[in-house]
Amino acid sequence: MPSDRIRLISPEKVLETRRLLLEPLTAAHAAILYEPLLNSRLYTFIPQDPPASERALEDRYRKLSTRRSPDGSEAWLNWAARERETGRYAGTLEATVQEDGAAFVAYMVFVACQRRGFAAEGCGRLLAHLFDDYGVSVVVAEIDTRNAASVALVESLGFRRVALRRDADHFKGASSDEYRYELGRPEHRRC
Image (cartoon, rainbow, N blue to C red):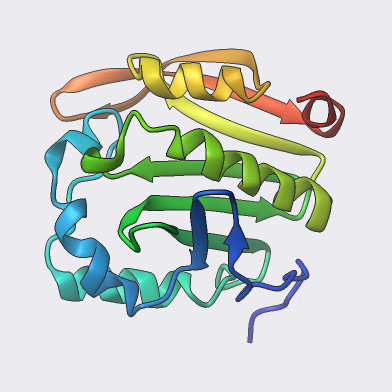
């Protein structure tokens, strides 16, 4: 039986922004999110591919919906971002909260919803949740150096580039360098 070393804070609560509802991810979201996740443009800068099947996505989301790693040392926080006005799903957000007080974040905005500020809005709410509710000390984003949009986003949110890792990964036939960005609690308060 896994230990529950990280306390989950309202893991089923919907987080809200002006234009988005961030719904805690469940296996039921797979049927809705499968089609927009098939767009290969979403995977240009990450070492994943589109889901193999709706069933595979459902299985993955079921595992994530436990909200904890098997050993209980990490909180797995994942949301499906839905537009308030249209009800259309715009993407996903995720945070892995670790025992040491750090959280790693990632996001994906579906191609049809890009360039509308949803990433900044959703990530801003996610950061507030991590700092205010989970009390994390630092939030980390690791980004492929070729991903100019994500670099611009995290910098606009106050993250500082702290490292460059050469040959961090190799996928889709190319080597990938990676920036490490960090945002601490004091920097977050100034944003």
